[in-house]
Image (cartoon, rainbow, N blue to C red):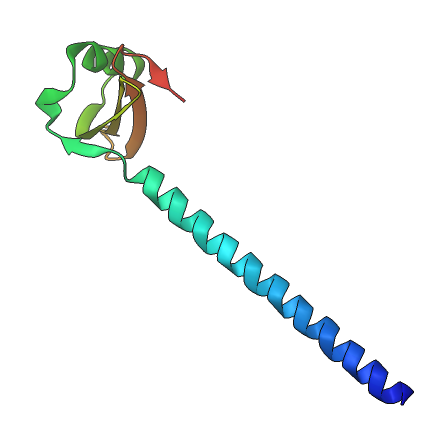
Length: 105
């Protein structure tokens, strides 16, 4: 009889752990989904639509680099610009500026 009780207890403990692992897998899936959603909030725009104050700030902070592509996002009335800069050597970097020409790090 003791062997039967030990076997039942063992089965119950193993099944409860599998529920915990399944719950952890679902949490990871939700977190990945949310991270992807926040990255897609920028909308591509023409480089000519980037404000002059932002262009001037880029020329000052990143001399010799040109804007290769631009995107904009607006949150709580504040616009931020995500810009891909290209150097003369061919390397690219991504920077983010607000609509006042201040770099966001």
